Image (cartoon, rainbow, N blue to C red; front, side, top):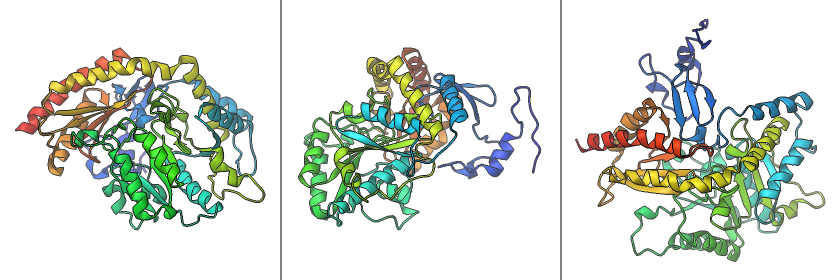
Length: 461
C-alpha cells in the first residue's frame, strides 16, 4: 500500500492513485480514468460553490445531486450534529424512541399536506421508495385485498436501485442487467409534452393509468408512484389537471397514490413538498436528500392516517425497518436544516427567483441545439436536438459524442457542475442550491452559451 504525502494545502498528493485503485464510484465508468484523465476530487464547499483538490472553484448547479438545498458550508448543521452526538450518539427506533426522532416526525407532519401524519424514517431515498411499495402491498393485505401487489410507474422514471424500487424504475438500461426484478412493476407513458402531438388531450397520460389498471385488473394494483416533476428524461412537468385526474382514478379503484419527492420535496419546487406545487393530495410521500440538505444521510416515508390505521391496533405491525433510520444525529441535523428553511424562507426565495432562472435558460433558445426548456422551481432542464424545427433527436452514437465526449467535460472545465443525461433524449439538468439568485444565474448563462454554441457547431460537422 502506498504512503501518502502532503502538498502545501494538506491534500494528499496520491489521492488520485488511491481513488483509482480503491474507490468504486457509483454509476461511473471506472475504466475512463487514467494517469492522464483525473478523477474529479471535491475537497470543500461554501454557499453555492465547491472547490477541487487544485483549489479551483465550481458553481454547484446540481446541489450535489439535487440535495444540498440550503447550500454548502452551513456550520450550524455540523454543530447540531456535534451537540447531538455528545448527548445521544445512537439508538434504534425499533420498539424504542428518542427525542430527536419524535421532534422531527412531529415537525414533518406539521408541514406535510392533509392527513399525512405518520413518518417512517429511512436511511435514504431508495429505502423510502422501497418502504412505500411494501407499505402499499401490506396495507391492502391488512384490509383483505392481498392480491393488490402491483404498482404502476412511468416510462423513463427513476425511483431507485434496490430490486423493489428498480421494478418501479422505467429506465431499461438500469433494469435489464439486474433482471429478474421483484415482480409487480407496470409502466405507463410519462408527461414529455414536448414530444406529444399538438392535438393530444392534456390528461391523456393520466387516462393511460386508468387503462393500465383495468388491463392488469383493479383487484391486483396496489399503488401508482409518480414524481411531481419527473427527473429522468429531463424535468417532465405535468399538464394542467393531470394529478387531479390521477387522484380521481386512484380513488375509483382503491389504489394508493405515492408522490415520490426524493428530489422534489424541501423547497426544490418552491414548496416544502412538490405535491403542493401542483395541488394534489397523495396517500404517501417519499422523501430524502434535502431533508438534511445532504449533510448526513436520511430519508422518510410519510403516510396518511388512513394508510397507517391498520397497523396502529392490537398486535399488528409493519414488519420493516433499517438500523440507522431515525438516527439521532441525522434527526438533529434535519431539524436544524428545516429551521434554516423557515428562518430564511428558502421556499419563498425559490418562488421569487424561479422566473429569472427560467428566463435565463429560455434566452438560450437561439442556439440551434437547444430544443426545449422545461421544469419548475429550481429544477430545470434543456433538451438538446439535431433540428429545432422537426425536434429530431440524436442517435445513441451521437448522444455519446455530445454528452460524454464533449459537454460533461467542457462544462466542468469552465467551472459549472450540472448533469448531462441521456436516460431519455439528451438533456442538461440544473438544480442549484436554493440560496442562488441572479448572480449565479448569470454565471450559469456565461458558461452555457459558449459551450452550447460550440456543441451545436461540432454536431453539425
